[in-house]
Length: 135
Image 1 (cartoon, helix red, strand yellow):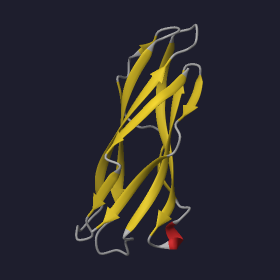
Image 2 (cartoon, rainbow, N blue to C red):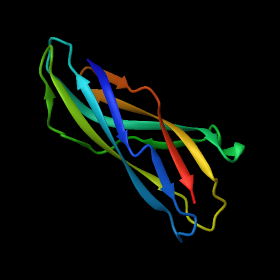
Image 3 (tube, rainbow, N blue to C red):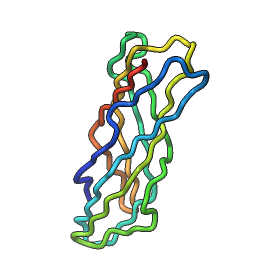
């Protein structure tokens, strides 16, 4: 069982500083999962963990963000057949831009790791860099 590929769009989130409230933006991840085991495997849950790795304001570096215990994914009923089963799951994560009028950074870079829980264990992606730009 392995995650063989991850593609995501968009890698940059544009946030406006003149908006009166928080705005959510969507990021779609296409996660290709391959079953190398002798048993059928099902994906049960996808979660995420993110950390700010770079920012215009140094006090934001190291903050935990984009941490979700469960993220919607499709197809939810797919199973990976033994030995060579492969499914591309689309995972849609919402990320919030902070409300305008508050002290916002010019940008933050977040490394997000997806955790794919299956019937045989947990598998994680390498960190995926997401850039949030405030204008």
